[in-house]
Image (cartoon, rainbow, N blue to C red; front, side, top):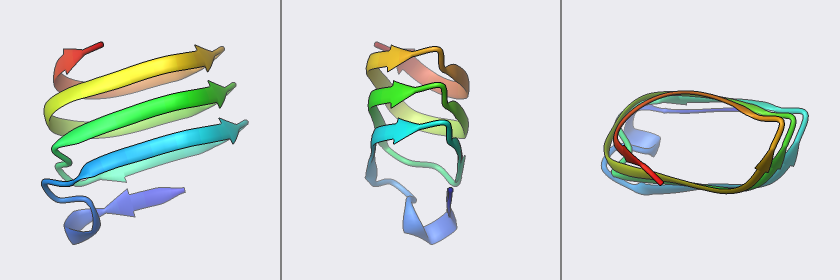
Length: 69
């Protein structure tokens, strides 16, 4: 799955309920919410504010952000 450019620029992005997926965020979102992921890989360029990650199991996050919660 890939989201990019104008699609996520300065927007809140929510990634939920995925299993065995690779997600690429190619743009600059305002905030990213990651919830209920299992065995996923998340790749994200700069996020303007925070990334909120909850209920994630066996996931890899390759991210750049101001805060990770």
